[in-house]
Image 1 (cartoon, one colour):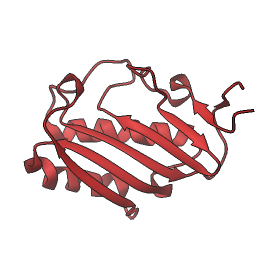
Image 2: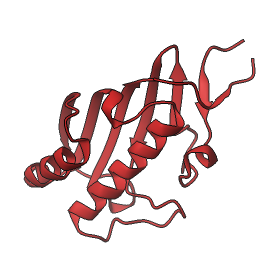
Image 3: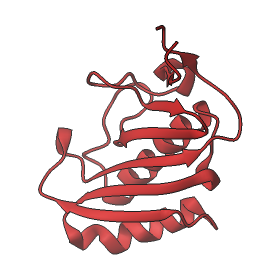
Length: 139
């Protein structure tokens, strides 16, 4: 039997993935969260909204994926943020700090040229699971 646990998007209350991937995959005590964009739960995009609004929706999606995987923002150990335009970094950092609160996981911010659908931000993460969730992948 495959030891991975795949978290289905319906469990997370999120829009279905736009490609051949899962929002979260768990293995052992870790949850691996795929890159999240600012897609609303109904599948509509926020790429036309101000940067801070995109950050908030992206981090909400991260939180939903984490919760469905048996983790939360406080259990995140690693974050990678891809930002179109390094000039957005201070604004990203301000919203990120406000959402993450006292949690200070290891983090890398990578300036990139562009992202899907015109988004200015994508975030992925690794977290420690505090309780089980999801469904096992069939072997």
